[in-house]
Image 1 (cartoon, helix red, strand yellow):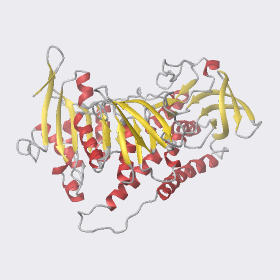
Image 2 (tube, rainbow, N blue to C red):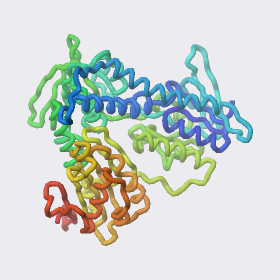
Image 3 (cartoon, rainbow, N blue to C red):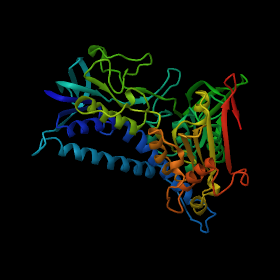
Length: 498
């Protein structure tokens, strides 16, 4: 069989690439060894965020300061998992419905998409062998262009006994029969903190979180990490700060873990389950990439330059390159790879204005630089912080915990450098900023936009007005709720704030 494009992997990046190739009228083959939708649907963004939404619903149902009290609120883990599975099934049905319709060319369009279930490996740079899911089933195909979109999997290490029963990764969590009474989460990055938030929201599990640094989310600013940590601890999460996992074993149906504190002392704790969340690694094993001459980085990722690999007609997109492991980026890269093949590619893909959401408590939305990154790069900047306590929509929602922070260049132009928004509906505040960073625009353009009222985006607007000295709420009055400062650097490169 010969195709114009072969896409290995039907996760978000691979699916987007296949559909974009169909747009160009190409004969496409998708090879997928697992489920359509990949980890982005089944073990990642969709399932974990569905869990987060359900946990938030449950937690809100228990609130007692709104003038009403809900009685007999109970939660059942199996029913929660059923709801998560239903969400995933809905998305898979949509994806498969489209593939079924696009299987054959139709009048006026010659594109087609063939789907093969099985494991792919390179025979040479243009030939793919596919071992089918049924015994003895095998295919061999060739393609003019190939897209590798095999995604990633949770990283595990040899000294941690991951068994999928007692010691889990994010792939295993929904297999549990009930809420564990206790769990330790190894890793205090975004995913580890998200699962700590979810489990503590449900309130059925004592959560321990091992943090190698002195605070969770070490890549984020101190004010962001501190608020999220305080909320976790308020719900009973124990954060082992400056602690490393010495060893972990499973004994008598319990997980026993030993941590080494910064002081050198050891502490051993027993819990029902452990969740390992220490990053992800690319799925390149078994692809026989050497047969195609594809170069890898020292850490095992596929080397790419704007989706192009070291072989001119082979492209790599999504988590397999680990440029940034985000569904939206994978989809953009998948489409972009096809545009490289058959269309006019726009300006170089920029990762400087990527929007992201961290599903914590409160919700955290981000785009561009934070203060840590700006100071690491020695970028002079002005910063304004506006508390949710002053935002009418947040007051109406009785959800005043959070803030909006915006960074701009420390000059008359005041170009937008980045934003962090924490709180209810935080993600609604960042899209305009992402576009402005991409276009290198001045923050002044945000000052007089007509926002609906009440809306959380009004915090962003008055934050900008603070930078211009025209805010409705004045920082010298609301000293605890508002912050306005500028950062420069001394001769040694140390930051100075004024």
